[in-house]
Picture (cartoon, rainbow, N blue to C red):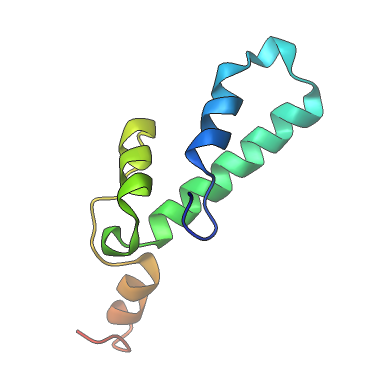
Length: 84
């Protein structure tokens, strides 16, 4: 099961298993958009907020952020509006 806003591991595997040469332009574009959105969601979500399954999937796909703080949290802290 995927975390909110994330692609499931099954969807990622399905997209990766089918060669681009067998995909329509629409499928290729959809895969690119979904991959970018998933990468952004991974970056925005702190590691502590991810399920074990999502952490493993991110590690395997090279989409792992090592920070324990979300990008939003870091921005708030930089502006002096955060908790730290």
